[in-house]
Image: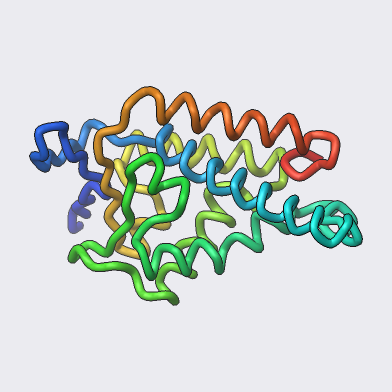
Length: 189
């Protein structure tokens, strides 16, 4: 019976600039905030488009069971990851995604990773499935130090130091968008 070696998928860059691989310290909460900050910014973008076209389309009519905006984010996130190695939310929270050999993901790898995060990480945005998937992913990253999608895509998540103000501002933006769009049902059905 061979023993599987699990390599950590996250490294932490300390304030003095030294790279410190911390197998006991992963940042699931920073990752969670970055993802939902991306979703919030995307929802604001979609709301802006809706406003510009005078509200002639509604996401609510098309996404009664599976939130379409979470799915629509997949190719956009993939484009960001394959060109910049980060997304707006990850950039703000100083997180980068790269391949294990330190290069940017190609578009197809980024697309598969983003799809797997949508499917397994947030459970397609379906409320009950979402909670179960988030709990499973949180448990897995704390136990194994790597998510299933990062292991499959052989990606490395790098966190740079962030101040508390970034966390607080991210949480405020996410909460504001959540409250603003609560009546429209973009986050919750």
